[in-house]
Image (cartoon, rainbow, N blue to C red; front, side, top):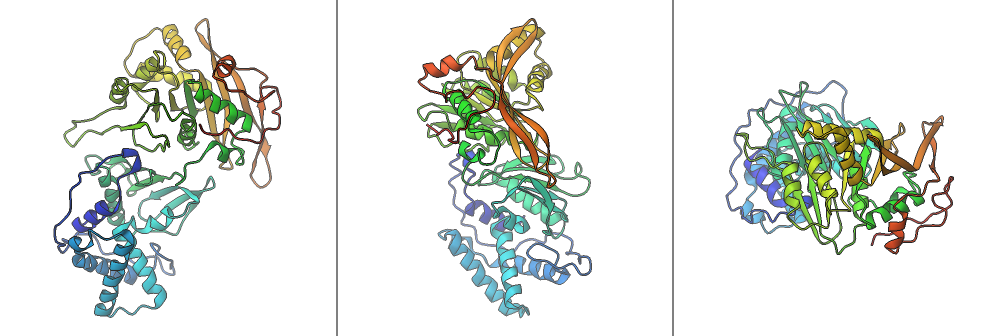
Length: 489
């Protein structure tokens, strides 16, 4: 990535919200310099007959023209004169400079072609190139770039191939480098994998050669600009209002909750929603590998891990952050995901006065989640007798919320289970609510029903003691009508 392009991106893009960093506070006052030769291969002609818009195939002439104008545009931008500009003023300045270049180069373009070229060049300098239109589409929940020639998106739970293309692998690498450099990460042949985030909080993963054999791979998991609330899930049939009522009460009375599910099931979304029921007068510490939670409370401390530097030093792990958070007088600890040695510190924190903690884990069922917790403790090199470890787990975690992604792309809370203790060496659980998949309609829509087991959770008395009144009969088999979602405190 060119120096000027990088500086413009760093200056114009605000720091990502999860980081809550003050930045370096420095000002850029270097004059614009002509970009060095990149050594990139000239764009290749696309297959015959392939024409499209924006970053799509449009013929070699289009790419050659765009690359030439891009380089000339960078030589004419003066950072000193644009430091006081708003993003809109910068866009206008870029359009003015491009107009001059069009005139000087005598490029024969009609109005539509010129507008398209201006849009592409502004996206290259101010945004993330060809995928910028995808980032502007609120219906897209995931963007998956498999090399420079294939860009997939997920819409409404379904994956589809787009016509968006990058010029070549070097073009895609420049965009990846622009993303990771903004959050202080790096990606190269020595560190070919990187996690990052966009300014809107979207999660980013990138992997390049020599690990990615068919070109760089970029995956962007997007989150709603306005965070989802529990009331948004009920119309989507992700859970019932009775289930939502119970979950909100569990958070308010400081139950320790583990959200379990596979990849892409919506665990982080549910964690964010449940965190919204934490009272505003409590001190919350969030700990994540890549910060993406969007808590709305005022008293939130957000911590993020740090990878090792090029010399393999300076790494800050989740476990180190969990240990440090215990010295920060937290009322609640929200752990983005349990995946390694931090599990033992999390369990000990939950069991020693830090009730109301929340976390997620990759598992396909509530019982599998318990087994995974045991495995993670063992992988951390901590030797505990099986019974002692299971007693620690059963006394630390109060509820497991299982989420699944259905074949039609919808997400559902398929089980809410309460840990009820031990029988011999086995952790016992009682299911409070569940979802039963009964079939699939001709149009592919999943059919099924939510139901209550008829078991009243043991925590009911604690909920009543907090002054929270649950709906009458909500735990009876066959959920009663209840259309109202619980409100955040």
